[in-house]
Image 1 (cartoon, rainbow, N blue to C red):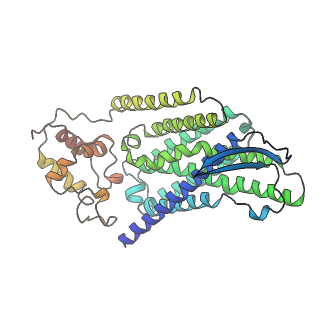
Image 2 (tube, rainbow, N blue to C red):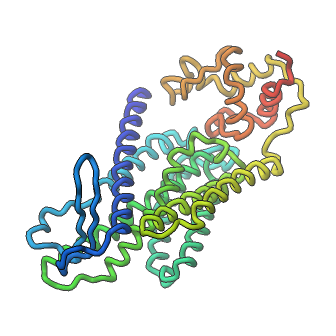
Image 3 (cartoon, rainbow, N blue to C red):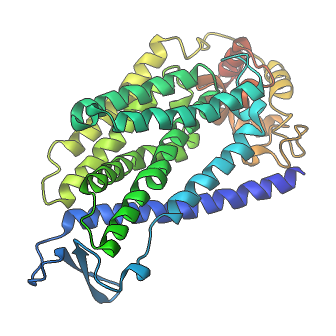
Length: 397
């Protein structure tokens, strides 16, 4: 059964990546295209802009119309299935990995003592409530004040991140903040952008003036999606960087890195519209450096790194800890039913294997404290300190 779930997860993850690339690629292209369109050279009153481009050994001319030319409606291509499939496959991954394996991947008893069912309920509820709150905010008078709206949205995302860190494992909290943003993006397409397109096409077919307010609102949601994209992409790769989500201020680091992504995207948007990126890219670099420096300082000041250098620990103690807390998963034949093979191909059955991976063990087990997953084997801080002391070289080797 484990092998079947592994292959199912692989397939769904592959579909998620493929659909996500198609969706993000189309989003980036159309935002770039809209910003790059120039005044049309012809006198066609229905034309709103045009662009010449070269690609793949040929020249292309893109034209934007204010209305749909006759006979074209039935041939229109709708960019929607990429978004829908990305969200459906992403939610399926949440089910396969984080909900069916809630005790290992979703929850950490050291964070909150809740049942898997309660954890899944909070996870799904955060996506639903998050969309309802965001949609209401977008339809409120606050949306007309861009800077105040952006600041309010940022504070709300930070609040969600902080709240999830009080309930889930750090890794699961990161993934669910990203899932929330992905849900907002897909729901924008389903509930706002595509209905606006339907209204536009219907108005053309009926020979009436379309409701421009609907189109303007849809364009604003599309722009929101554009700024959400880079933060979501970071979350997708964040599992490779436990020093971010495993930090005691992981939720704040996530918010800071979201800011880096949004500033980077803003710079591209300015450049695409013919304006200078100006301060945006230097600000993004400065913010990234600032987050990195602050993370290091706050981690040490907060006592996150255990004081281990002056301890004398023998390998026999390390072996006992590894066998009790790690080998149930990291063995050639894992005893944990969730794994058909050792996660990441990491085996810790011999001293040579442990020594070869001691720096990695320090990073994820001692410093970030994100292993064991969900700490379901109950590793204590004292045991982490003993591992760290041995890795630091307290025992001559």
